[in-house]
Image (cartoon, rainbow, N blue to C red; front, side, top):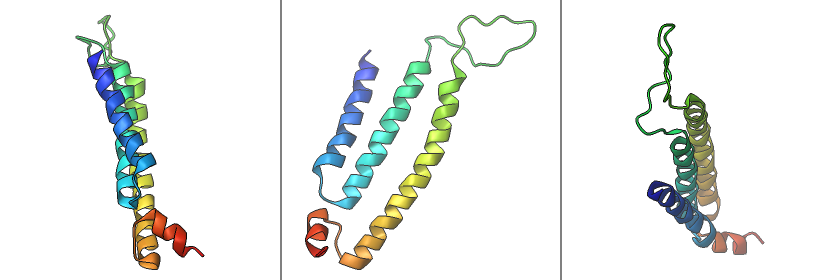
Length: 112
């Protein structure tokens, strides 16, 4: 149960960085932390104590098997998250090239 609480704390740290920080780089890091907290939660839900790998043989009966579906979903989410992170970083670099700052309050003022 404590590990779920730690996952929630990790999610809250990422959410805090997204909502409170004014620097684009810190906001991007908050998005990454939040994403990995959700991925960790999915893996924790699929975990079973003393579970076995989901490999079946015709002559074996496995009673305590780990669920493979969340593992596959998280693997896909990591790949998609990497692409989204690369896109966000490239947008942040373009914003820095145009405005010369990562501070979102200054960018709003320069908007016009």
